[in-house]
Image (cartoon, rainbow, N blue to C red; front, side, top):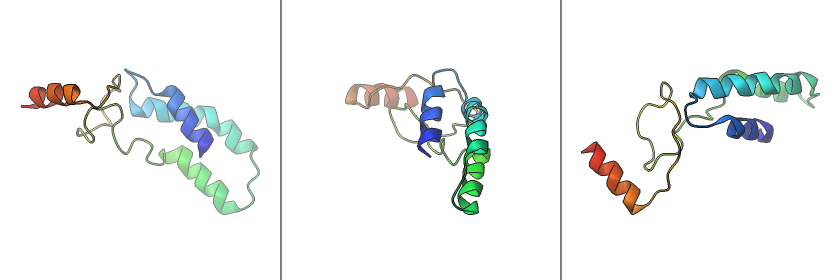
Length: 96
């Protein structure tokens, strides 16, 4: 899980869609998965499922001034901004 998290975080940047990140992580970690000996078959199954499905890593948009700004799968990532009253004011004015 930690390797997956770190691999995903390394690939998230402005202009990259979530599917591209998930595909890159899958490509990068598949050799590690295949070389790993798990103590229980269920652990191997869970690791494969994580690589296949993404495990909900993009279940919420990231880098937004406000949480859950709507659909996120078809959009590209954007540079994050800090949550502050100034950002909130800009965001709310743009949404009005």
